Amino acid sequence: MRKAGVASAPASAASSAPTSLASSAPSTPSSPLARMMERMLPWHWPEEAVQACPSVEDGMSHAEVLERKHHAYVFIEEMRNGIKFQPIVASTAMVLYHRFYHYQSMKQFKWKEMAWCCLFTAFKIEEKVMKMESLLKWSHHVSCKLTKMSPQDMERNKLDVHGRQFFEMKERLQFNERVLLQTIGFDMDVKQAGFMVIALVKTLKQRNPKYTAAWGKRVAKMAFDWAGCSAGSELCLLHKPEVVALGLLYGAAHDLFGEVVHPSDTEKMWDAAQPLIQPGEVTERLLHSIMVHLFEYCQRFKEPRAFWRSKSAPQGPGVDDKGKKVEVVPPPQDPSRYGPDAKRLSSSDGHAGLASASSHTVGGAGSALSSVSSAGRPVVASAAHSGAMEVVAAGAAASGVADGAGAG
Image (tube, rainbow, N blue to C red; front, side, top):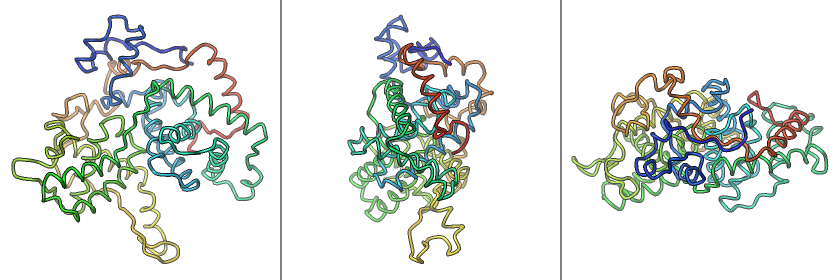
């Protein structure tokens, strides 16, 4: 178990901070002001730092981390299908989930418990009403459903709100919520890439008549749906939501029309998105790398699931069980057919060049990863919480609801 308390950031991690903030930070890393300045840094890191998360340091592979994050995304989407809440709540929950596990290990905090904890917190952030009792009952139901339990067994294992299992789940949820809020530094400012897509389309249409209403509607719809799929990927840890949204618009324009409409020969689309995107902030290679990242994620985990399910359905794609035509958004096509021949970029290179091949593998990054990845990883607020954690772990093992090792 990791040492209780807030870990201080080493000098190597401070060197990767912006110059203005790093120079103004005090010389004592453990001071309250230093921790506050660290929390003020943006929630975006180089790809090698994201891949060297605490779960990887504890022996998991990055592929296993990605798989469990995708399972959490599927879990939250199944919750949304049952409770019928807005997509913004699910997107906010996934952003909190990614941020939490950038500082904490999946071997210490079980992925499924944190999934419903992040969803519970997201309801509060987005000011939506959700009772804890309803959330826990649906969490238990979805957990049983994802383990492919028979209807008879699901009825026998129905959660009793007056029983011990419900009480233990409620205690774990409240404890995990406290740890989550401490880990993210009570930073509730969460922007969504999907809503940035709409804002960027409005900005482009106002700045240039080439971006017609028909163009904006088709491109925005496809990019907005892709933004929902990207919630399960780590794009929110690598780039700002405005940059991710612009990359999705870039890919949607290529998939729909075969090219990107530019205002003029000298001004590109990504330069005309002011004030949301500053001039020179992004390049075509960066936008292309975002689409490569999303393409790899969708092909690996078969997203969007509605598209892959419709392809294998007897009635064919675009038709539901009742024979009615439905619009199914396809995943992005292979980005290698357009744009510069570039791999995914590391955000530490200033978006100006290609990342080296070693930065895409945990082992190839060398010993520098350990110093970068261990920067400011708070685990438990106090020693008293350490004892509470043991009680929580014992309750989780007894109930068997939260599955910390498998897909669930």
